[in-house]
Amino acid sequence: MTGRARASRRPSLLLVAPLGGSAILVAVAALNSSVVVETLVLVVLGVVVAVLASALHAARRSRLAAQQCAADLAAALESARDATVLDEDTGLLNRQGVLLVARHVLESARRSGGAVHCCVVEVTPAVVLGGPGGAQGVAERVERTAALRAAAAAALRNATRSSDVVGADETGRFLVVGPGTGLHAQELERRMRAGLAEQRHAERAAGGLVTAIAERQTVDVGAAVLAPWDEGDVDDLLARAEKALQQRRALRTSAPQAGWGRRRADIEPH
Image (cartoon, rainbow, N blue to C red; front, top):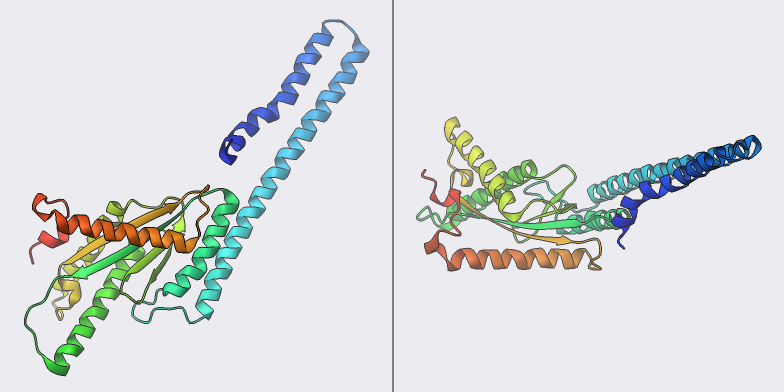
C-alpha cells in the first residue's frame, strides 16, 4: 500500500475507537448498570481525547515539515544567489545554479511523497538572410542573440509558476524544475509562443529598432517527471527531459507536411 493510500485511510481509522466505544456504551446502557456505564463513559472520553491529541500532533508535524521544506528551498535559493551561478544575459540561474536548487526541490518532494518535473526549452529564431558582414555583422548577431534570450527568459518566467526554478544553460537552452507534474510540453510551448508574440507586437507598436524579438521563433519543449517511487536523481530527470526534447524536435522536423510540428509563430505573418 502506498503512502497516499495509507494517508487516505487515516481519518476513517481514527473514528474506529470512538465509534466502537460508543457502541459498547449503548450496549451496556441497555443493561441498566449505572456504574459500568459511568466507567465506560470515562474510557470513551479518554480514547476520544487521545485520538484528538494524536491528530493534532500529526497536523503539527505536517505543518512543521512544510515550513522546513520552504526554509530549505529559500536557503538553497540564497546560496545560489551568493555563488557564481547566474546567467549574465538573462539574469536567471545557470545550469549549476538550477542543479543546486533542484536537489533541494527533489529532497523536499521525497519527504512529502510528491513528484518533481523538469522541462528543457529551446527557442530558435528564424533565419535572417543578408545583413552586414565582418565585425559589424558579428556584433549585430551577438546583440540579436542576447535580445532573443532576454525575451525568451521573460516569457518563460511568465509561463511558469512561482514555485518553479527557471534557469539558462551555456547551450542557449532554458531549464525548468519544480514540484509536481508541471505543465504539459505543448502547453508550455503555447504559453511561450504567446509571450514572445506579445513582446513582438509591443516592439512593433513602439516603432523601435528591429531586434530578434521582432522575428518569428520556434519553441520546442522536452518534459519529464520523476515520480515519488522513482529512485532517479536530478541528473536522471534532466537527461530524460533532454531526450524528450530531441524526440520532439525529430518528430516536428520529420513530418512538416502534415502540419504536426508547425508552430503558430512559424506561420504568423510579419
